[in-house]
Image (cartoon, rainbow over all chains, first blue to last red; front, side):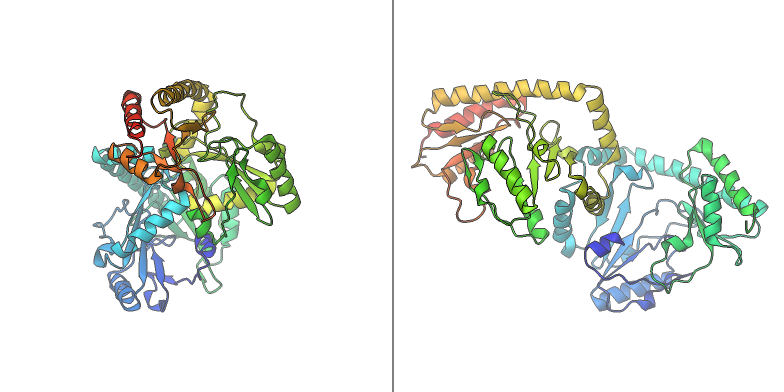
Length: 259
Length: 259
Protein backbone atom coordinates (compact mmCIF):
# COMPACT_ATOMS: atom_id res chain seq x y z
CA UNK A 1 0.00 0.00 0.00
CA UNK A 2 2.77 2.45 0.87
CA UNK A 3 4.56 1.58 -2.37
CA UNK A 4 1.43 2.33 -4.36
CA UNK A 5 1.02 5.67 -2.59
CA UNK A 6 4.66 6.58 -3.11
CA UNK A 7 4.29 5.92 -6.83
CA UNK A 8 1.33 8.37 -6.90
CA UNK A 9 -1.02 5.63 -8.06
CA UNK A 10 -4.65 5.46 -7.03
CA UNK A 11 -5.52 2.39 -5.00
CA UNK A 12 -8.93 0.78 -5.08
CA UNK A 13 -9.75 -2.46 -3.37
CA UNK A 14 -11.85 -5.48 -4.25
CA UNK A 15 -14.24 -7.29 -1.94
CA UNK A 16 -13.32 -10.86 -1.12
CA UNK A 17 -15.84 -13.68 -0.79
CA UNK A 18 -15.56 -17.45 -0.77
CA UNK A 19 -14.48 -17.44 -4.45
CA UNK A 20 -11.65 -15.01 -3.70
CA UNK A 21 -11.39 -11.42 -4.93
CA UNK A 22 -14.48 -10.04 -6.72
CA UNK A 23 -13.09 -9.76 -10.25
CA UNK A 24 -16.35 -8.31 -11.59
CA UNK A 25 -15.59 -5.09 -9.69
CA UNK A 26 -12.63 -4.41 -11.96
CA UNK A 27 -13.10 -1.69 -14.55
CA UNK A 28 -10.52 0.61 -16.11
CA UNK A 29 -7.71 -0.09 -13.67
CA UNK A 30 -4.26 -0.43 -15.17
CA UNK A 31 -3.31 -3.35 -12.97
CA UNK A 32 -4.59 -5.62 -10.23
CA UNK A 33 -2.59 -7.33 -7.51
CA UNK A 34 -3.95 -10.73 -6.52
CA UNK A 35 -2.89 -13.61 -4.27
CA UNK A 36 -4.71 -16.32 -6.25
CA UNK A 37 -3.32 -19.39 -4.51
CA UNK A 38 -4.28 -18.30 -1.00
CA UNK A 39 -5.88 -14.89 -0.61
CA UNK A 40 -4.13 -12.88 2.04
CA UNK A 41 -5.45 -12.63 4.73
CA UNK A 42 -8.73 -14.49 4.18
CA UNK A 43 -7.08 -17.65 2.88
CA UNK A 44 -9.46 -18.68 0.07
CA UNK A 45 -8.08 -19.60 -3.35
CA UNK A 46 -9.32 -17.71 -6.39
CA UNK A 47 -11.95 -19.94 -8.00
CA UNK A 48 -11.46 -21.40 -11.48
CA UNK A 49 -14.22 -19.17 -12.79
CA UNK A 50 -12.66 -16.01 -11.33
CA UNK A 51 -9.26 -17.04 -12.71
CA UNK A 52 -10.76 -17.15 -16.20
CA UNK A 53 -12.56 -13.86 -15.57
CA UNK A 54 -9.47 -11.95 -14.54
CA UNK A 55 -7.56 -13.14 -17.60
CA UNK A 56 -10.43 -12.01 -19.81
CA UNK A 57 -10.55 -8.66 -18.03
CA UNK A 58 -6.79 -8.14 -18.46
CA UNK A 59 -6.98 -8.90 -22.19
CA UNK A 60 -9.98 -6.63 -22.73
CA UNK A 61 -8.63 -3.77 -20.65
CA UNK A 62 -5.01 -4.10 -21.77
CA UNK A 63 -4.20 -4.35 -18.09
CA UNK A 64 -1.62 -6.20 -16.05
CA UNK A 65 -2.31 -8.82 -13.36
CA UNK A 66 0.31 -9.20 -10.64
CA UNK A 67 0.15 -12.70 -9.17
CA UNK A 68 1.76 -12.55 -5.74
CA UNK A 69 2.42 -16.22 -5.02
CA UNK A 70 3.74 -15.49 -1.54
CA UNK A 71 3.13 -18.94 -0.05
CA UNK A 72 2.29 -21.17 -3.02
CA UNK A 73 4.81 -23.82 -1.93
CA UNK A 74 2.59 -24.75 1.00
CA UNK A 75 -0.53 -26.62 -0.06
CA UNK A 76 -1.86 -29.45 2.02
CA UNK A 77 -5.24 -30.89 1.10
CA UNK A 78 -5.49 -30.63 -2.63
CA UNK A 79 -3.42 -30.86 -5.77
CA UNK A 80 -1.32 -27.79 -6.38
CA UNK A 81 -3.09 -25.12 -8.39
CA UNK A 82 -1.11 -24.07 -11.42
CA UNK A 83 0.09 -20.49 -11.48
CA UNK A 84 -2.44 -18.06 -12.93
CA UNK A 85 0.46 -16.67 -14.94
CA UNK A 86 0.46 -19.70 -17.26
CA UNK A 87 -3.00 -18.68 -18.53
CA UNK A 88 -1.75 -15.39 -19.99
CA UNK A 89 2.03 -14.93 -19.84
CA UNK A 90 1.73 -11.71 -21.83
CA UNK A 91 -0.59 -10.08 -19.27
CA UNK A 92 0.45 -11.56 -15.92
CA UNK A 93 3.47 -10.82 -13.76
CA UNK A 94 4.28 -13.77 -11.49
CA UNK A 95 6.04 -12.97 -8.21
CA UNK A 96 7.62 -15.66 -6.06
CA UNK A 97 9.70 -15.29 -2.94
CA UNK A 98 12.07 -17.08 -0.58
CA UNK A 99 10.57 -15.14 2.34
CA UNK A 100 8.25 -17.97 3.42
CA UNK A 101 10.32 -20.97 2.40
CA UNK A 102 13.62 -19.66 3.81
CA UNK A 103 13.51 -16.28 5.57
CA UNK A 104 12.14 -12.80 4.87
CA UNK A 105 15.52 -11.36 5.92
CA UNK A 106 17.09 -12.84 2.79
CA UNK A 107 15.21 -10.30 0.64
CA UNK A 108 15.20 -12.63 -2.36
CA UNK A 109 12.31 -13.12 -4.71
CA UNK A 110 11.77 -13.61 -8.40
CA UNK A 111 9.51 -12.25 -11.11
CA UNK A 112 8.31 -13.72 -14.37
CA UNK A 113 7.28 -10.71 -16.44
CA UNK A 114 5.69 -10.28 -19.85
CA UNK A 115 8.54 -9.69 -22.29
CA UNK A 116 7.16 -6.24 -23.10
CA UNK A 117 7.74 -5.19 -19.47
CA UNK A 118 11.13 -6.79 -19.00
CA UNK A 119 13.31 -3.75 -19.74
CA UNK A 120 11.17 -1.45 -17.59
CA UNK A 121 11.29 -3.85 -14.64
CA UNK A 122 15.07 -4.22 -14.92
CA UNK A 123 15.43 -0.42 -14.99
CA UNK A 124 13.20 0.01 -11.95
CA UNK A 125 15.15 -2.61 -10.02
CA UNK A 126 18.42 -0.97 -11.00
CA UNK A 127 17.17 2.39 -9.75
CA UNK A 128 15.82 0.91 -6.53
CA UNK A 129 18.93 -0.92 -5.38
CA UNK A 130 21.11 -1.70 -8.41
CA UNK A 131 20.69 -5.40 -7.71
CA UNK A 132 20.22 -7.83 -4.86
CA UNK A 133 23.26 -9.27 -3.13
CA UNK A 134 25.15 -11.34 -5.69
CA UNK A 135 26.47 -13.66 -3.00
CA UNK A 136 22.96 -14.40 -1.72
CA UNK A 137 21.68 -14.97 -5.27
CA UNK A 138 24.51 -17.36 -6.10
CA UNK A 139 24.01 -19.21 -2.82
CA UNK A 140 20.29 -19.63 -3.46
CA UNK A 141 20.96 -20.74 -7.05
CA UNK A 142 23.34 -23.43 -5.80
CA UNK A 143 20.83 -24.43 -3.10
CA UNK A 144 18.14 -24.89 -5.79
CA UNK A 145 20.46 -26.61 -8.29
CA UNK A 146 21.62 -29.15 -5.73
CA UNK A 147 18.05 -30.18 -4.91
CA UNK A 148 18.45 -29.11 -1.28
CA UNK A 149 15.90 -26.33 -1.68
CA UNK A 150 13.22 -28.77 -2.85
CA UNK A 151 14.03 -31.14 0.00
CA UNK A 152 13.81 -28.25 2.45
CA UNK A 153 10.41 -27.16 1.08
CA UNK A 154 9.04 -30.70 1.30
CA UNK A 155 10.30 -31.08 4.86
CA UNK A 156 8.86 -27.68 5.79
CA UNK A 157 5.52 -28.50 4.18
CA UNK A 158 5.19 -31.62 6.30
CA UNK A 159 6.15 -29.74 9.44
CA UNK A 160 3.72 -26.88 8.76
CA UNK A 161 0.97 -29.31 7.88
CA UNK A 162 1.43 -30.98 11.27
CA UNK A 163 1.23 -27.63 13.01
CA UNK A 164 -1.92 -26.78 11.11
CA UNK A 165 -3.49 -30.11 12.02
CA UNK A 166 -2.61 -29.58 15.69
CA UNK A 167 -4.11 -26.08 15.57
CA UNK A 168 -7.31 -27.36 13.97
CA UNK A 169 -7.69 -30.29 16.36
CA UNK A 170 -7.05 -28.11 19.40
CA UNK A 171 -9.55 -25.46 18.30
CA UNK A 172 -12.22 -28.06 17.55
CA UNK A 173 -11.78 -29.58 20.98
CA UNK A 174 -11.23 -26.52 23.12
CA UNK A 175 -12.82 -23.61 21.23
CA UNK A 176 -15.83 -25.05 19.37
CA UNK A 177 -17.40 -21.58 19.21
CA UNK A 178 -14.88 -20.33 16.60
CA UNK A 179 -14.89 -21.20 12.92
CA UNK A 180 -11.61 -21.81 11.11
CA UNK A 181 -11.05 -21.27 7.38
CA UNK A 182 -8.31 -20.63 4.85
CA UNK A 183 -6.48 -23.72 5.97
CA UNK A 184 -6.01 -25.72 2.76
CA UNK A 185 -2.75 -23.91 2.09
CA UNK A 186 -0.30 -21.39 3.41
CA UNK A 187 1.05 -20.60 6.85
CA UNK A 188 -1.90 -18.91 8.51
CA UNK A 189 -5.52 -19.65 9.36
CA UNK A 190 -8.47 -17.33 9.67
CA UNK A 191 -10.19 -17.86 13.03
CA UNK A 192 -13.68 -16.35 13.00
CA UNK A 193 -14.91 -15.22 16.38
CA UNK A 194 -18.53 -15.40 17.59
CA UNK A 195 -20.50 -12.40 16.36
CA UNK A 196 -20.79 -10.75 19.76
CA UNK A 197 -17.05 -10.74 20.46
CA UNK A 198 -14.82 -7.73 19.93
CA UNK A 199 -11.89 -8.49 17.65
CA UNK A 200 -9.83 -5.70 19.21
CA UNK A 201 -10.32 -7.11 22.72
CA UNK A 202 -9.24 -10.59 21.71
CA UNK A 203 -6.16 -9.22 19.88
CA UNK A 204 -5.27 -7.18 22.97
CA UNK A 205 -5.62 -10.17 25.29
CA UNK A 206 -3.53 -12.31 22.95
CA UNK A 207 -0.89 -9.60 22.88
CA UNK A 208 -0.88 -9.48 26.67
CA UNK A 209 0.02 -13.18 26.58
CA UNK A 210 2.85 -12.57 24.12
CA UNK A 211 0.99 -13.72 21.01
CA UNK A 212 1.35 -11.62 17.87
CA UNK A 213 -1.93 -12.51 16.17
CA UNK A 214 -3.52 -9.83 14.01
CA UNK A 215 -7.17 -8.89 13.74
CA UNK A 216 -8.70 -9.25 10.29
CA UNK A 217 -9.68 -5.58 10.52
CA UNK A 218 -6.03 -4.50 10.50
CA UNK A 219 -5.83 -5.61 6.85
CA UNK A 220 -8.92 -3.73 5.68
CA UNK A 221 -8.49 -0.80 3.28
CA UNK A 222 -11.32 1.61 2.82
CA UNK A 223 -14.53 2.06 4.74
CA UNK A 224 -16.65 -0.34 2.64
CA UNK A 225 -14.82 -3.41 3.85
CA UNK A 226 -17.12 -4.70 6.53
CA UNK A 227 -15.86 -7.94 7.87
CA UNK A 228 -16.48 -10.60 10.47
CA UNK A 229 -14.57 -10.43 13.74
CA UNK A 230 -11.65 -12.76 13.11
CA UNK A 231 -8.03 -13.44 13.95
CA UNK A 232 -5.31 -14.07 11.40
CA UNK A 233 -3.26 -16.76 13.11
CA UNK A 234 0.15 -17.53 11.62
CA UNK A 235 1.49 -20.88 12.77
CA UNK A 236 4.87 -20.97 11.01
CA UNK A 237 6.82 -18.50 13.07
CA UNK A 238 7.32 -19.94 16.58
CA UNK A 239 10.38 -22.17 16.79
CA UNK A 240 9.51 -25.85 17.23
CA UNK A 241 10.05 -25.84 21.01
CA UNK A 242 7.74 -22.83 21.46
CA UNK A 243 4.83 -23.98 19.33
CA UNK A 244 3.04 -26.06 21.97
CA UNK A 245 3.19 -23.21 24.46
CA UNK A 246 1.97 -20.68 21.92
CA UNK A 247 -0.94 -22.91 21.00
CA UNK A 248 -1.90 -23.32 24.65
CA UNK A 249 -1.92 -19.56 25.15
CA UNK A 250 -4.10 -19.05 22.07
CA UNK A 251 -6.58 -21.61 23.40
CA UNK A 252 -6.61 -19.87 26.79
CA UNK A 253 -7.46 -16.54 25.15
CA UNK A 254 -10.27 -18.10 23.13
CA UNK A 255 -11.57 -20.03 26.17
CA UNK A 256 -11.92 -16.77 28.08
CA UNK A 257 -14.75 -15.92 25.77
CA UNK A 258 -15.72 -12.28 25.49
CA UNK A 259 -13.26 -11.31 28.22
CA UNK B 1 22.68 10.48 -12.67
CA UNK B 2 19.83 8.12 -13.61
CA UNK B 3 18.59 8.16 -9.99
CA UNK B 4 18.48 11.96 -10.04
CA UNK B 5 16.54 11.95 -13.30
CA UNK B 6 14.12 9.31 -12.04
CA UNK B 7 13.40 11.45 -8.99
CA UNK B 8 12.52 14.35 -11.31
CA UNK B 9 15.31 16.49 -9.87
CA UNK B 10 17.31 18.95 -11.92
CA UNK B 11 20.96 18.10 -12.15
CA UNK B 12 23.65 20.72 -12.51
CA UNK B 13 27.33 19.98 -12.41
CA UNK B 14 30.36 21.72 -10.93
CA UNK B 15 33.69 22.20 -12.63
CA UNK B 16 36.61 20.41 -10.99
CA UNK B 17 40.09 21.88 -10.70
CA UNK B 18 43.14 21.02 -8.63
CA UNK B 19 41.29 22.03 -5.42
CA UNK B 20 38.41 19.67 -6.21
CA UNK B 21 34.86 20.73 -7.07
CA UNK B 22 34.27 24.44 -7.62
CA UNK B 23 32.15 25.19 -4.56
CA UNK B 24 31.75 28.87 -5.52
CA UNK B 25 29.48 27.75 -8.39
CA UNK B 26 26.85 26.58 -5.89
CA UNK B 27 23.79 28.78 -5.53
CA UNK B 28 20.25 27.80 -4.60
CA UNK B 29 20.65 24.05 -5.06
CA UNK B 30 18.94 21.89 -2.42
CA UNK B 31 21.83 19.47 -2.22
CA UNK B 32 25.28 18.75 -3.58
CA UNK B 33 26.93 15.35 -4.01
CA UNK B 34 30.69 15.42 -3.47
CA UNK B 35 33.52 12.88 -3.30
CA UNK B 36 35.74 15.00 -1.02
CA UNK B 37 38.40 12.42 -0.21
CA UNK B 38 39.22 11.56 -3.82
CA UNK B 39 37.17 13.28 -6.50
CA UNK B 40 35.80 10.74 -8.95
CA UNK B 41 37.14 10.49 -11.60
CA UNK B 42 39.79 13.22 -11.43
CA UNK B 43 41.26 11.99 -8.16
CA UNK B 44 42.01 15.28 -6.35
CA UNK B 45 40.93 15.75 -2.74
CA UNK B 46 38.69 18.69 -1.88
CA UNK B 47 41.02 21.36 -0.46
CA UNK B 48 40.71 22.52 3.15
CA UNK B 49 39.45 25.88 1.94
CA UNK B 50 36.77 24.35 -0.26
CA UNK B 51 35.73 22.06 2.59
CA UNK B 52 35.10 25.12 4.76
CA UNK B 53 33.33 26.84 1.87
CA UNK B 54 30.89 24.04 1.23
CA UNK B 55 29.93 23.84 4.90
CA UNK B 56 29.31 27.59 4.92
CA UNK B 57 27.24 27.31 1.74
CA UNK B 58 25.13 24.48 3.19
CA UNK B 59 24.44 26.45 6.37
CA UNK B 60 23.53 29.62 4.48
CA UNK B 61 21.40 27.87 1.87
CA UNK B 62 19.79 25.38 4.27
CA UNK B 63 21.08 22.74 1.90
CA UNK B 64 22.37 19.20 2.27
CA UNK B 65 25.84 17.95 1.35
CA UNK B 66 26.14 14.27 0.45
CA UNK B 67 29.68 13.06 1.12
CA UNK B 68 30.20 9.94 -0.98
CA UNK B 69 33.27 8.40 0.65
CA UNK B 70 33.45 5.60 -1.89
CA UNK B 71 37.12 4.75 -1.44
CA UNK B 72 38.21 6.62 1.68
CA UNK B 73 39.80 3.51 3.18
CA UNK B 74 42.59 3.68 0.63
CA UNK B 75 44.99 6.55 1.27
CA UNK B 76 48.68 6.10 0.70
CA UNK B 77 50.87 9.18 0.91
CA UNK B 78 49.32 11.39 3.53
CA UNK B 79 47.49 11.27 6.78
CA UNK B 80 43.85 10.34 6.41
CA UNK B 81 41.61 13.33 5.90
CA UNK B 82 38.79 13.42 8.40
CA UNK B 83 35.31 13.04 6.97
CA UNK B 84 33.76 16.31 5.85
CA UNK B 85 30.67 15.17 7.73
CA UNK B 86 32.31 15.88 11.10
CA UNK B 87 32.37 19.60 10.23
CA UNK B 88 28.57 19.87 10.09
CA UNK B 89 26.72 16.69 11.12
CA UNK B 90 23.40 18.54 10.83
CA UNK B 91 23.98 19.40 7.15
CA UNK B 92 26.04 16.53 5.78
CA UNK B 93 25.04 12.99 4.86
CA UNK B 94 28.02 10.64 4.99
CA UNK B 95 27.90 7.59 2.71
CA UNK B 96 30.33 4.70 3.09
CA UNK B 97 30.38 1.38 1.27
CA UNK B 98 31.79 -2.12 1.31
CA UNK B 99 31.87 -2.09 -2.50
CA UNK B 100 35.58 -1.17 -2.72
CA UNK B 101 36.85 -2.87 0.44
CA UNK B 102 34.97 -6.15 -0.10
CA UNK B 103 32.88 -6.41 -3.27
CA UNK B 104 30.26 -4.33 -5.11
CA UNK B 105 28.09 -7.46 -5.41
CA UNK B 106 27.50 -7.38 -1.66
CA UNK B 107 25.33 -4.26 -2.07
CA UNK B 108 26.13 -3.07 1.45
CA UNK B 109 26.82 0.49 2.44
CA UNK B 110 26.05 2.79 5.30
CA UNK B 111 24.80 6.33 5.82
CA UNK B 112 25.28 8.79 8.65
CA UNK B 113 22.39 11.22 8.26
CA UNK B 114 21.40 14.41 10.05
CA UNK B 115 18.82 13.40 12.64
CA UNK B 116 16.19 15.57 10.95
CA UNK B 117 16.47 13.37 7.83
CA UNK B 118 16.62 10.03 9.58
CA UNK B 119 12.92 9.10 9.34
CA UNK B 120 12.69 10.14 5.69
CA UNK B 121 15.76 8.11 4.77
CA UNK B 122 14.44 5.03 6.58
CA UNK B 123 11.09 5.39 4.75
CA UNK B 124 12.79 5.75 1.38
CA UNK B 125 14.93 2.67 2.03
CA UNK B 126 11.85 0.72 3.12
CA UNK B 127 10.03 1.66 -0.06
CA UNK B 128 13.03 0.86 -2.25
CA UNK B 129 13.74 -2.66 -1.01
CA UNK B 130 12.37 -3.04 2.55
CA UNK B 131 15.89 -3.65 3.81
CA UNK B 132 19.17 -5.15 2.73
CA UNK B 133 19.80 -8.85 3.32
CA UNK B 134 19.82 -9.43 7.07
CA UNK B 135 22.24 -12.33 6.72
CA UNK B 136 24.74 -10.19 4.82
CA UNK B 137 24.38 -7.37 7.35
CA UNK B 138 24.93 -9.68 10.30
CA UNK B 139 27.90 -11.29 8.59
CA UNK B 140 29.50 -7.92 7.91
CA UNK B 141 28.80 -6.78 11.48
CA UNK B 142 30.56 -9.85 12.84
CA UNK B 143 33.42 -9.35 10.38
CA UNK B 144 33.85 -5.78 11.66
CA UNK B 145 33.42 -6.68 15.34
CA UNK B 146 36.03 -9.42 15.18
CA UNK B 147 38.65 -7.04 13.77
CA UNK B 148 38.96 -9.10 10.59
CA UNK B 149 37.54 -6.29 8.46
CA UNK B 150 40.20 -3.84 9.66
CA UNK B 151 42.92 -6.38 9.03
CA UNK B 152 41.53 -7.01 5.57
CA UNK B 153 41.47 -3.28 4.77
CA UNK B 154 45.07 -2.83 5.97
CA UNK B 155 46.24 -5.80 3.91
CA UNK B 156 44.33 -4.53 0.87
CA UNK B 157 45.74 -1.03 1.30
CA UNK B 158 49.29 -2.37 1.21
CA UNK B 159 48.51 -4.51 -1.82
CA UNK B 160 46.86 -1.66 -3.73
CA UNK B 161 49.67 0.72 -2.79
CA UNK B 162 52.17 -1.71 -4.33
CA UNK B 163 50.12 -1.90 -7.51
CA UNK B 164 49.94 1.85 -7.67
CA UNK B 165 53.70 2.15 -7.19
CA UNK B 166 54.31 -0.40 -9.94
CA UNK B 167 51.95 1.49 -12.25
CA UNK B 168 53.69 4.81 -11.55
CA UNK B 169 57.19 3.39 -11.95
CA UNK B 170 56.28 1.64 -15.18
CA UNK B 171 54.65 4.73 -16.68
CA UNK B 172 57.62 6.93 -15.72
CA UNK B 173 60.03 4.52 -17.37
CA UNK B 174 58.07 3.44 -20.42
CA UNK B 175 55.57 6.23 -21.11
CA UNK B 176 57.25 9.48 -20.06
CA UNK B 177 54.93 11.46 -22.35
CA UNK B 178 51.88 10.91 -20.08
CA UNK B 179 51.18 12.72 -16.82
CA UNK B 180 49.70 10.79 -13.89
CA UNK B 181 47.61 12.36 -11.12
CA UNK B 182 44.99 11.49 -8.51
CA UNK B 183 47.28 8.86 -7.07
CA UNK B 184 47.51 9.80 -3.39
CA UNK B 185 44.44 7.73 -2.62
CA UNK B 186 41.86 5.40 -4.06
CA UNK B 187 41.98 2.63 -6.59
CA UNK B 188 42.38 4.49 -9.83
CA UNK B 189 44.78 6.97 -11.43
CA UNK B 190 44.16 9.66 -14.01
CA UNK B 191 46.58 9.27 -16.92
CA UNK B 192 46.74 12.45 -19.01
CA UNK B 193 47.59 11.92 -22.64
CA UNK B 194 49.63 14.27 -24.80
CA UNK B 195 47.46 17.07 -26.19
CA UNK B 196 47.50 15.80 -29.78
CA UNK B 197 46.22 12.31 -28.89
CA UNK B 198 42.62 11.22 -29.25
CA UNK B 199 41.21 9.82 -26.03
CA UNK B 200 38.66 7.73 -27.93
CA UNK B 201 41.36 6.11 -30.05
CA UNK B 202 43.44 5.15 -27.03
CA UNK B 203 40.39 3.75 -25.20
CA UNK B 204 39.48 1.73 -28.32
CA UNK B 205 43.00 0.35 -28.64
CA UNK B 206 43.06 -0.56 -24.94
CA UNK B 207 39.70 -2.28 -25.34
CA UNK B 208 41.04 -4.27 -28.31
CA UNK B 209 43.75 -5.56 -25.95
CA UNK B 210 41.16 -6.54 -23.35
CA UNK B 211 41.70 -3.55 -21.04
CA UNK B 212 38.57 -1.88 -19.62
CA UNK B 213 39.99 1.60 -19.07
CA UNK B 214 37.58 4.52 -19.42
CA UNK B 215 38.17 7.85 -21.07
CA UNK B 216 37.76 10.88 -18.83
CA UNK B 217 35.17 12.17 -21.32
CA UNK B 218 32.80 9.31 -20.50
CA UNK B 219 32.26 10.87 -17.06
CA UNK B 220 31.48 14.38 -18.30
CA UNK B 221 27.97 15.76 -17.89
CA UNK B 222 26.93 18.78 -19.83
CA UNK B 223 28.59 20.57 -22.71
CA UNK B 224 30.62 23.02 -20.62
CA UNK B 225 32.88 20.33 -19.24
CA UNK B 226 35.92 20.64 -21.47
CA UNK B 227 38.62 18.32 -20.32
CA UNK B 228 42.06 17.04 -21.11
CA UNK B 229 42.42 13.78 -23.01
CA UNK B 230 42.95 11.28 -20.21
CA UNK B 231 42.38 7.70 -19.16
CA UNK B 232 40.83 6.64 -15.86
CA UNK B 233 42.91 3.60 -14.97
CA UNK B 234 41.59 1.39 -12.18
CA UNK B 235 44.31 -0.87 -10.79
CA UNK B 236 42.33 -2.81 -8.15
CA UNK B 237 40.27 -5.11 -10.30
CA UNK B 238 42.61 -7.59 -12.02
CA UNK B 239 43.31 -10.62 -9.87
CA UNK B 240 46.88 -10.74 -8.60
CA UNK B 241 48.09 -13.15 -11.26
CA UNK B 242 46.73 -10.96 -14.06
CA UNK B 243 48.04 -7.59 -12.91
CA UNK B 244 51.50 -7.81 -14.50
CA UNK B 245 50.01 -8.76 -17.86
CA UNK B 246 47.42 -6.00 -17.71
CA UNK B 247 50.11 -3.45 -16.90
CA UNK B 248 52.22 -4.62 -19.83
CA UNK B 249 49.27 -4.24 -22.19
CA UNK B 250 48.58 -0.73 -20.93
CA UNK B 251 52.21 0.24 -21.52
CA UNK B 252 52.06 -1.23 -25.03
CA UNK B 253 48.99 0.88 -25.83
CA UNK B 254 50.66 4.03 -24.53
CA UNK B 255 53.93 3.21 -26.33
CA UNK B 256 52.10 3.06 -29.66
CA UNK B 257 51.64 6.77 -29.36
CA UNK B 258 48.91 8.35 -31.42
CA UNK B 259 48.10 5.02 -33.03
